[in-house]
Image (cartoon, rainbow, N blue to C red; front, side, top):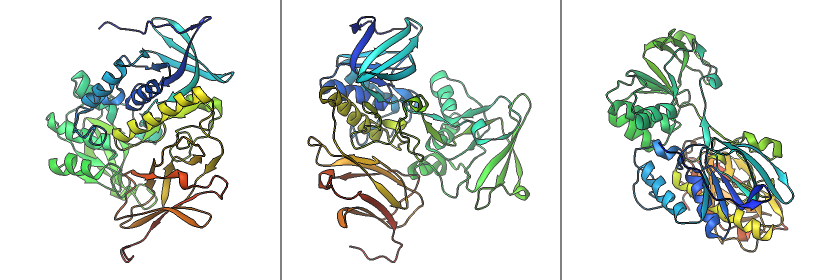
Amino acid sequence: MKRQYSKRQYKDGQRRCCDVVVIGSGPAGMAAAVSAADAGASVCMIEREEKMGGILKQCIHDGFGLIRFEEKLTGPEYSWRYQQMVNERDIDFLNLTFLTKIERSGKGFSLEFVNPAEAVISIEAASVVMAMGCRERTDRQIFLHGQRPAGIFTAGQAQDFINLKGFMPGKRPVILGSGDIGLIMARRFTLEGASVRGVYEIASLPSGLTRNVVQCLEDFDIPLHLNTTVTEVHGRDRVEAVTVCRVDENRHPLQDTARRIDCDCLILSVGLIPENDILIPLGIELDPVTRGPVVDQFMHSSCPGIFSCGNALHVSDLVDYVSESGHAAGKAAAEWTKSDLVGSRKLRLSAGGIIQYIVPQSITEAEHEDSALPVYFRPSVPADRAEFLLKQSGRILYKKRFSYLKPSEMQRLEIDFARIDPEGEMPVVELTALGMEADDE
């Protein structure tokens, strides 16, 4: 296949220059590039793979785009819509290109990249949008015991093998973890004629969306074993079996419940990690829960000029919300290049109750912000009834009740930040479990 590289040169001495550099061309990166270009910025989008689209290229199942396009699309179809938007705009695209360094340079940033065509590339940019997505946890990161035979894959790797390369990783898989990709791959293996031995989840609840549990497991009679994990892998050259155990309330294996499950591959769906390691030298504040940057409503990080969006910011359930955050980050990054100021005083949100995390984590006073902007959060525990409150100086600025909440399902609210007093006390966000006895309002 012929490899194509960008031919456009933004020259300033020996360096390329542009207003906004977008790192990553998945759904968040494409949305950010489109939004920044529409705001009048010169944009360069960087991608380490050959084609834009990110993980969407291998997600051949449908269910994408119900919010953004009001249609049920497959991953490649959703990606193609945004690729057309990118191609219709004056956006520079560098593929097969890796970011190796980013550092401050005057009021902007100096970035270095490598690719096979031009070796080392330097770009100067006024602002940067980080849309690198996330990576999967591996067997080494969950300290899985046993040998390291062939046949241990992450769910994303298995999806790539089957959907893009046409190879079956195995015929009798065991799936560890009930994340959405793991659930989808349980169905995918079954549709390809494999016999899924079971899905094993260490927690007491599935970590994927309820619709995926129903459509991918229950509809295909694939067993889901909660409070159970894989403790050992057996096999010298190839996976032959795994040992599974029930776990106690502290997730410690109960050895007397151990049993051997014959299989020929182990598929891991045990969590995702936002790709933000390269930001550490810049001293950007990272949220210990999301592992993405702490941002305000403009997706602006603690480092002036660095914006974050998509799964690099926090892992989202729906691609529509990934694109939404990309649009917000791209627009704000373009505005930053014009005014060098997105807002003035920042107020940190104080989160309490059963909130696991909330994004954005702070509010910036700004005259040009929209009246209502999205807020994303996850609860730390399931709740049949719950109440969300935004308060400042004793005033309730926003209130919403939920009939049920699950940690596996992210929630989105639209809140009018203009009601927050920039000179007032720290805004407080609380999520309280009410219980079934609470009265309706």
